[in-house]
Length: 557
Image (tube, rainbow, N blue to C red):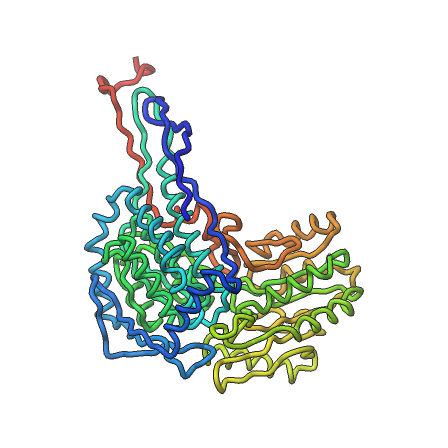
């Protein structure tokens, strides 16, 4: 639950006066364990049972009203694609323009609302997710996106709750960050929302990301058009309803599933676009960026562009590394949620002196991994990949490995889409460190390994830095402190989130703010206190308390 207490701190205020002000203290949401007989396990199993073979009808929501168009679609469960979990529709250009108008009609009043009022809505939403709505959001994430219990819990519960609470706290803290005032004048910094609307485009792989991409700008006084992923409609709509139940006015966020190009063309052609908050592929983000550039002369303000675009994340293993940490870290990072995390490890560099033992341990642990239906079998480690498109793409990579003379499949490699989109966890050894499997993002349960001569680790560090266009996450496994320091320096720009003796996944809000540069995005560090500044346009107000009695200066006399 939300930890609130008054912390009396000295705050600089106008006229050199000081007074006590209330601050808000929040903590990371505890991750529940769902052990046999626990109340949370019972509640989740009940929620999963209620969703079994059920389909929810999910409309577009524009101007606070449910709207259906003729372009009806279905979201299916990844591990049972015969199960349609949601019926929804695409917003067309006319409906999207109506959504823009509806959002703009509410913008001024919402922006003028006290920051405390807006923050309280998100604190309440977090409390709802932490308590009475937790099982629902977890079950919909599991059934709709194919997550296991723990992967749903750390995403749709813990991370989303943390986003709402910490962002709300940061927004309140921000009000106390004021410029210096002097006896003759008072200076105030006002954190306004952006002038226009923000377009939020969210991915399938994290329910929490959708809530944050739409929620953070709204928290800061903006109005938002939220385009959720087609393969996360069920959970995204549940998040949207939680926000409404927490008191978010209906016109602040417009819920508009849509065809990607139609949405992109419509929002970027509006003179009122003031920001795009995006998580997805590099080509899509580049295309949106180009569209904004082409339309720059029509905008009323320069749009803010924030994007997170994935990575080709690495684990570097030095000869001094702890082998158990190396193996377990690789298994978790590469295969949890089927490798469908932006931060998942997909390239592993191992010294030849350790490779026989690490290879043996990897194959031993690989045989224990259970892939299946996470809603019915809680011992499942990961489930099917998200949809047929992903299945075919990953299958293509495995076929490439089967035919390439430089690649050897050490484990896994089988694909089966009869019931769901299942791909075995696959480990591939590459003789060529520059083979495309070592540089291109796969976004599936495929781990590529390159074995290097142990004394050439410096060259490998340079190779890691230059192999991929991305710069999201990476990890170094070593006990030698000098090597750790050296790797940290040489890989300074190779990862926005850099881990030492830990896996490349698992960033926690407020502990490891997340994001990377290069092709991985704009590195705005979601989950950090500065992220919300992307969604404000500050104004400085100077009020002078003395009369100006002359216009000349002393030097003129």
